Amino acid sequence: MASDFDLEIPRAGTASVKYEGRGAYFGSDDVIPLWIADMDFAAPPAITRALMERAAHPIYGYTLCPDSLYEALIAWMKKRHGWEIRREWILLSPGVVPSLHAAVMAFTQPGDPVVIQPPVYHPFFTAVTVPGRRLALNPLRLEQNRYRMDYEGLERWAAEGARLMILCSPHNPVGRVWTRDELGEVLRIAERYGMIVLSDEIHHDLVYPGFRHTPLAALADNPPHVLTAVAPSKTFNVPGLGLSALIVPDAGRRKALREVFDLFHIGAATPFGITAFEAAYREGEDWLDRLLPYLAETRDFVADFLDRHAPAIQPLPAEGTYLLWLDCRELGMSDAELKQFFVHKARVGMNPGISFGEAGSGFMRLNIGAPRLVVKEALERIADAL
Image: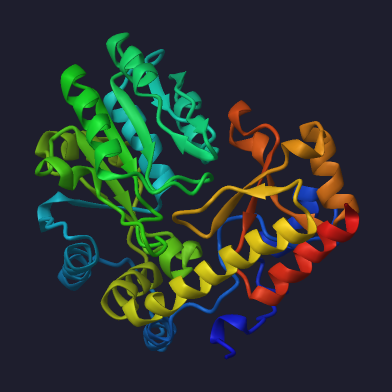
């Protein structure tokens, strides 16, 4: 049966980075854009209605975050993730990436090592290097077609003085949903060495059947050294509206983060960001419950298609996110050759794995958050090019 997620919605003329930025990124507009992490699906109708109602009021002045917004987030986290959080723990931010930078600046000094686990979302790198901190690379290990964390490496970095780790959970781009035991080991190391962990959980709602996201902070009754970043942006396809939340149980840590935000006069509240944030968490659940099976079917379709028509490209089994990590090493191409092949021969725009760190060499990241016929056309182009 046709789904509303099968509807192709033209995005030309909307200043979309994904579409109107592809020429600058790929050097060609003639690619199916399956790269930057937003979806080609209409946002939940409840969000559109709420935005239209707010837009009908013709004054868009400075805006406060109402109590109802915090209540919506608190209720969502309890219902979807079994995590009870308090109003005073929540700091609002214009986005998760600014939150990463704020945490690095608040809890480390220039030259300090900050742990990240590549291949990982590329702003993790710049959040460390731009403020003058040192990358403490603890690459994930690919074992039997599944990535795992290197706990020995993590403990070495902690012992050598890393005061902060940035964790990606669920992980972008490799699609892992970390288990309770895996996260428990991260907590054990953090607690032993007094290392703060900022857990970027922006993909926390995008988990496939058979897997379950566990908030890191919920494992040990909200430990003071764990900070959690969440947002409705990936879940409900509203990343252009920018609002996110940091959940920080420790009052001292919240004060330190506020001081960094105040230093740059960073304000989170905009009329439309607030409206969408609350509407998403209050009324978006039914839409999400329809989205997840659609994404799971697309994930399985991609795996089956590549197995039959392009077996040299192997998608790693995705446990969460709408991003597939494609192992292209059997093609025998360099990273530059891979980019050339997919852009100019297959005419499909994906993120090169190397952009997620050296550990991503030989891989590509495919965004499946699009109508399935669009994904199918991209796969057919790849198969034909091969």
